[in-house]
Length: 101
Image (cartoon, rainbow, N blue to C red; front, side, top):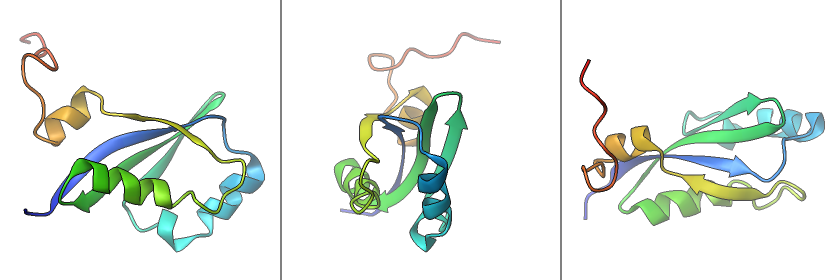
């Protein structure tokens, strides 16, 4: 099986504290371009682009980055319509086509 790049979003259970954010910012594994933090009021998520043979391996690798962060819990993995399209998984049965412009 060929290695592919998989796009997905990890949603945290709670917004990162300032200390947690500073710790993550100082770690190479969070600054190598595969995972990017997105902050909004009351919410932290990570946009991910990982290479793997299958999507579940890519997600497992991303989740592994958080193993040694007590209190930082990933609540869900999202494959939105953009991710489904980028991952080559979008079909009319899964995600409706956008309306014509």
